[in-house]
Image 1 (cartoon, rainbow, N blue to C red):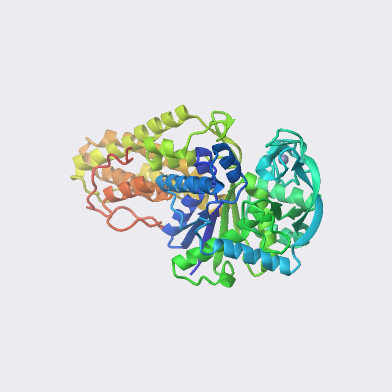
Image 2: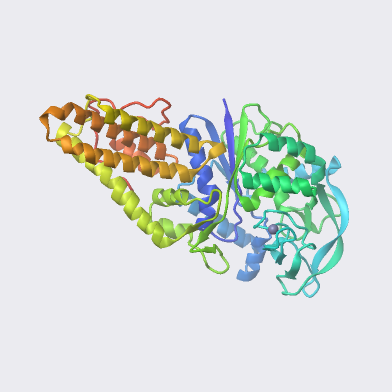
Length: 540
Ligand SMILES: [Zn+2]
């Protein structure tokens, strides 16, 4: 049986999830996993808490608590927010308590080291003399050597490319706000360029968007750099190599074996083989990864190269699904400046379905999009409550009045019935296409659903003029059967995005069986009892 592993970048537990986080990989991968599960595909959604990011101790310094306290507190908060957004992961790994994570990351690292795939280099590193601190990632800020945007150490969120800290322009230490000096340190490096040929081959097969393709090609053109995979720090997984006791494994190195360890943990949970050697290696296994473009280099360049180095038998991802930045009222979401709407706050006021639908509708797929609270509120009111709910209620009233609440037979069709039927078919095809990994677009799916509702509402209103005509009763039956078909397809097509609304509608349409995708869709059986199609959006 085919197995699909879906991953979403483990969030950093230095804060709760805001809408920017949710709109990207987390809701996206959940929608896709639910879509696959509706097709009876064994799909598993994996993520975890990225405890060992340097942003965790940085936050602990601000809060005057321990990094462990920060990682636990926000790791728990993140899980609660995902839960309340109905994001259902099959495994969410907490590195500290996982039976597999740290052990496997160290084994993976050691194997590469022993096989000579990591090299020792003495190189200049950024250093804060006043605070006597080695600087990397969260601890240093400056301009990206590739695109000139403001960025932190080791990678740029804007262009997605890695830097070496010492090559940053106008860099300052975040401890002292002074420009750093450089000191020579011995660290272990992973030479990416050794995998250039295999990466080129991989890019020929993996499905990904043009922005990410351009990033990969630019990096290949410029020559792939050596990446330091150990840093001087006391936070993170110890480097299992003598002489590196003061260093920790680079957290973005950790993520590659971390995904495999998550699979190992999942397999143990579902009682499949948890043998590391078989992970991601079986022929019928497919891997699809969801991440923000700012994490593009790690997933599309570093991780595949690490997997190739570790074991060329590991199946590399078949598709990368990326998103761009989501802005709040025109500005970047920022935890530190408190410019954020927290997922948990919005989810206390609105049902997860409504929040998920809007995040999909405005998802930053190929370019940055913007969340404005008043736009969200007016969209919910005018589209979901007024249009969707009105159409379904009107349909419901007609059913009760004309057929005692039971589905009529298909009646007799005229050209307008055939035309509406074709339209429903087109909406189903359009949504199905937008659900595929290679063109995954929750934006298109939600817009298609809105259009399906708009057209159905308009068709229903127009046909209502004939209700009082005794000679047209067979046509009315045809119209109402078609509207019921549209409502049924709405329940099916919206299931991955609005699971509660969908089940609610499905049950009210009289179905006892669980909801499944229908390749060849069928009409609601004649005489099936339909409940009143009201209160479909659970309120908060
Ligand atoms: Zn840049």
